[in-house]
Image 1: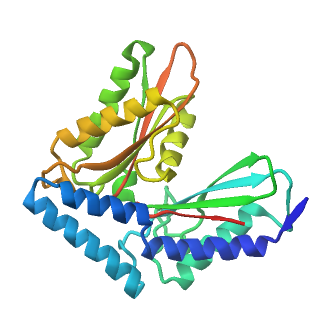
Image 2: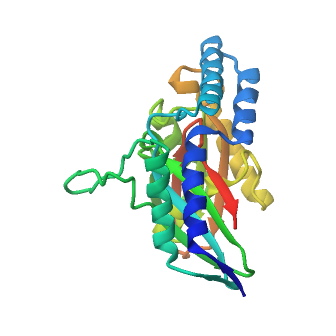
Length: 278
């Protein structure tokens, strides 16, 4: 049994909040550079150049890459052999509060009824999964709502099959237009239940950019969706071209014989996220 102090969890989440706002992951930067090199539209290529410069300025000068610093979703993977000195949920929420306060990040979380801002960017949405071992892993995903608002979920009939699921995802991305600030990363959950599909769609965003699913048939679905999305021509910020999406990540879960849930969670071009192991 290994002991992990909750103060360390709070400090780690605080650092993740600040880091995610300013420094894009290397795979995302590589994806933007690759998109610029294959772009067929000169206008879209110019915009990609601006996005790449924006990411560089954000990192060098510690200016948030986007003014919408997001509502935080945090995935915690906790080993059963790890013992915490305090309350996990409280430690994570305090880390978010401290990160947004000390990092001078915009606070965007409000009560859904009164619309009154909490002033702290908490509460964050926290998911905890128990696994074997004694590690604690934290994945920090701040979602701006230009992209989050384009999420979709449909309870398809099984007769729709995978072709129907693919059509639903492609239509959701095309209809989103410029709102989620493409080029996008598209997370998709197929199967499970209403809430499981949405969970999978968001967690799928954390996979390294463009890494195919572990199942060959699911990887083929990802490739087909990506091809159809990019052939749709919405392009960078809706200005046309061949780069509406950088990647499509699909996750699946067994479902009921009478059901076919499909969820889409869209992420903007900066795809801010960070992870750490304690």
